Amino acid sequence: MISEEEARAKILEAVRPLAVRRLPILGALDCFAAEDYFAQFSLPNFDNSAMDGYAVIASDAKSGKRLRVVGEQPAGVDRQLRVSTGEAIRIFTGAPMPGGANAVVMQEDVAWSDDEIVVNVDVDPGEFVRRQGCDLSEGQKILSAGQRIRTVSIGLLASQGFAGVSVGGEVRAAIVSGGDELASAGEQLQPGQIYDSNSVVLQALVRRSGATVASAQHCSDDADVLRSAFESAAVNEILIVSGGVSVGEHDLVQSALRSLGAKIDIWRVAIKPGKPFLFGRLRDCFVFGLPGNPVSAFVTFLQFVRPAILKMRGAADLDLPRVPAELTVDLTNDGDRTHYFRGKLEGGEFAPVGRQESHALFGLSQSNALLRVSVGGSFKAGDVVEVQLWD
Image (cartoon, rainbow, N blue to C red):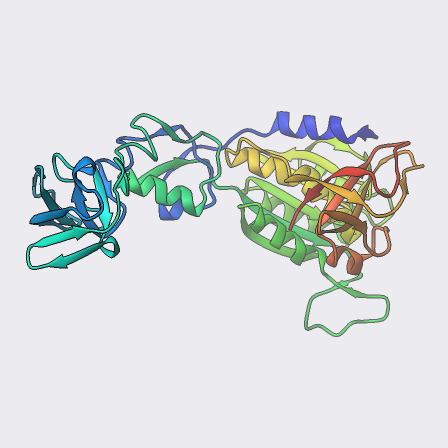
């Protein structure tokens, strides 16, 4: 049995980013940039008006001053207009500033009559003018390699004229759940059976991690059936096996994998829940064997499978979001494995929820965060701790 830190390090050392793809910017949403991107020009690209009103020379626009309106500049093509002393130009939001003008007076702050306006306020230089480059400078980095492309990232790329972007590769995952005790939704439960929830949760977790679920299959406790399923799944980048990775008489995953020539690099990790965890490789497919208990499968996916998927997709940050929280109860880890407590973060406070056992799915469903407590670790109510958010 190896430590959680050693297991994670071995996994991340083994996996590599996949081949880069070129996608339209809309298709790149939630992918990771494969290279740095820089502004091709400044934003705004020209001085423009922040309001509907009149472009003026500020020193010439004092309260009570009468100015002659000599033109109009709407948003759009620059009409190359110019303001001189005693003049104003009608202007609209986003329109380029006329030559000579250094301020805009809002239309609400003037009285208009025929081709003249009377200014009702004193106007300061630069008032309601968006200066060229005030938001973004030409050559400024707008997206870093490994950064997730968010909705607003797409808007920024579009503002710079980018139609496409280079992103990390697509990860395809096959999921195999094993066990004669499992029944699929819609089937009649036989005595001693339970419905298969793990494969459904794992499909959701895979998708939430940005990978594609290529297949999801349930297999009986039969070595030949498992070998066939693993053989078919090996065409994908990763294979996730739920259940059957322990050492019981009916836990056939390891032997089935080895019979196909798989190399097993990790077997059992000092983590609670989740000790019977397996990591290996079947040809070019990375294999993750997760425990059959639902909470164990969930926690080991977040700690080991998720960061591997993100690295393969080209992400720079592989960790779950971490935030400080005030603990509401005393917690101690007297065991010999790192313990991840499941709980709810709300209003800046973290409270464990439900039974902290590997089968307790309801408590997990009410949680949104994990608290890692190392071996021998202890926290008191009121301590500020760091929790990992998954939802």
